[in-house]
Structures are given as structure tokens and as C-alpha cells.
Image 1 (tube, rainbow, N blue to C red):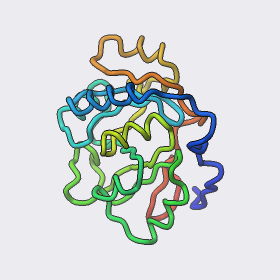
Image 2: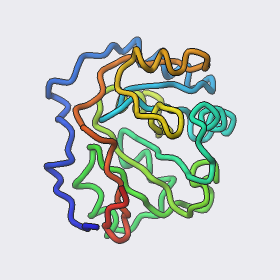
Image 3: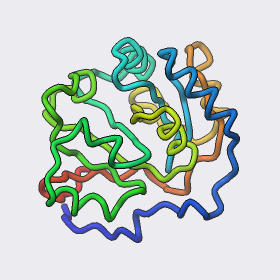
Image 4: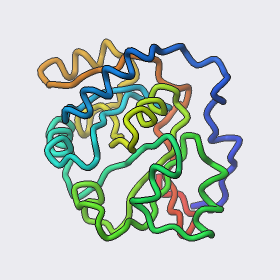
Length: 203
């Protein structure tokens, strides 16, 4: 395992690069569903993700049921800024200095969680996996929702990750999911995960 991160390798394209246009109406509609406790699917840096309000227990449990994911594993949160994540995390300057050069971008960090963070997010861990995303749709969803979102790959456990909306529609045809259509980023694999205390790569 390596503790060195090449930020140029992991940075997604800048906000002014050739990512596809997405409408503000689409984002507002998705945010309305999030506030109503819905599970949504949306494009991320590498694959479609499933998301919901992280503090809505019913929504998170519905997402876990759709995903067929054990609660013990914990979940990733994405945000539009570090400030959105601060209330969830125990941060010191060493950790901040380690994580901020990689954000916004497709690098997920596992960081100690504050005691109040619910177990439906942390699972059996005392930490939380988090990322400040630079995918324009995912970023704007978090910004307009005003909060981080749960982000887990939009595929049933043990099934391949989904990159295309047609496959997403087919896979979840019987599930009550609001889909935010869009193009996933150019990352070939799901985001790398690092431990924020040691700097070691976990995935």
C-alpha cells in the first residue's frame, strides 16, 4: 500500500472542462425528491450512484434494501465542499493538509467520525468515508440540497457497477428510485479510498 497520492492523477476535470450540460430544473426536481425522503440515482466520477439524505434513517434503510448492502459495511458521503462534511468528522490540521490537495476530485477518505454520527452511516466503524466531488451533477445536487449525500454504487451487491442509464432503468425497474440522468465521469474504476490518518490506500 502506498501513502503517496498524485493529485494530478486523481483530479477530475475542472469545472470549466468538457463535462456535459445539465439543467437546473433537473437538479431542483431531484432535490425535491431528496427532501421527501426518496432514494435517487445520479452520475458520479466513474459510475451511477445511489443516494439519499444521510440523516433520514428511513431513506438510508430503503437504499440499503435496494442495494442489498449490509448496514455493518457503512456508507460513503459526498459533498460539494469540505464545509458540508465538517459536522460529521473529527478533523485536525494534519488530516486537513492531507485531504484538501485531492479535493474536489475522485478520492475518498476514511476519517474519524464524530460521536453523534448514526450507525446507519458508519456501520461497524468509528469512521466515515467521505469525498468532495467534482462531478458537476453530483456537486450541484449537494450544493442545492445544502448537505452531503449518501453515495454508493447503483448496483445490487455482487453485481457489476452501472455506467449507463438504460442499464440502470432495467436493473431497478421494480424499485422506487428517482433517476437523475447524465453522463458519468471518465474515471475507469470506482474512486480510490484512503485512510486519512495513515495515508494508506484501502481500495
